[in-house]
Length: 398
Image 1: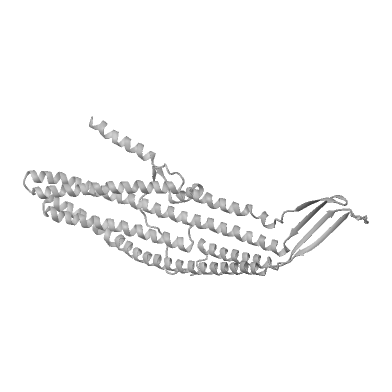
Image 2: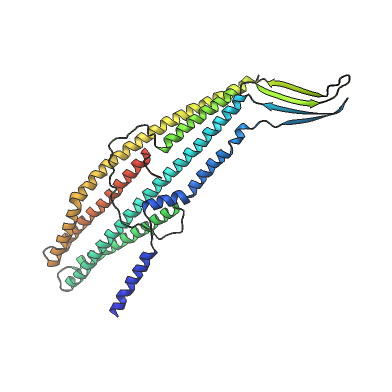
């Protein structure tokens, strides 16, 4: 019976493990870029601007006029109004610029999405590792409860110490339960990002690991040319200048060409052609539109400058955090983690032999696990600082 009881949990664990949807960070990013609705929306916006490209060469509607009665019966006429040729040239240039703006918006969406996936993936790994550490702590205090129960019965510890150990154990279990809830929420968040919102089986193949091979001290270029936001505001400046050029060209005379068919008295000429120009005498309307277009250029330039200031500030902050947490991680990897394991080992052995009391034991175990939790926080924040730096510089690959 004992063997059967042991086999059932093992089989159940195997089934649960097989049901997990193991996902690497790269796979999560690829799925997000493929399935996330935000990407689809940005692609549709690009397609919309591309569809508008032929409209930039559209002429005014052809005017067909029928006059009656006349001396020659009905007199049909056709009239076509045209803008000055530079208007159509500038409309084409503006639409090309609008397409590039839409494409740069798509790159911003992709960059933000990749950052969100990497951020949440790092957080998921952190919660997985924290859960493992809590289970280890839970296992240690489960053993202590059994020891304390025996010691209480033989009078080696007081009832207060026994109750205290039980309360502390329940606190660990509560923290583990809360961490598991956070873990499920992290899985749901990634599932939403990759376009499978109902998938709650997402997991990673390992726990929290350090991002290796990344060293940075200063920004390679303070204009951040690879950041999609920089490209977006650059394209916005181009589009605003194209719009200004278009408004200026509208001040030029337009062209009129037409034909009408009428046979008048005393003449044998039936077919007539007419040509003319449209003169923009209402200059204040054109001046106001040109003035507004100039302001759009100034706005775009100011937005570009402000975005650069923001990127510099965010980069400076992320770089300071990177240096801070790199130093912390190096401490834990060289000193802290080893001390934590030694404290746990020595405290458990000393308490088992009775050379230290319960409260001294509890103090040492708490200190040891606090070191481990601090290391996990530092490692999580270290990875996060690198992810943020790559996001700002534009080094994310997608």
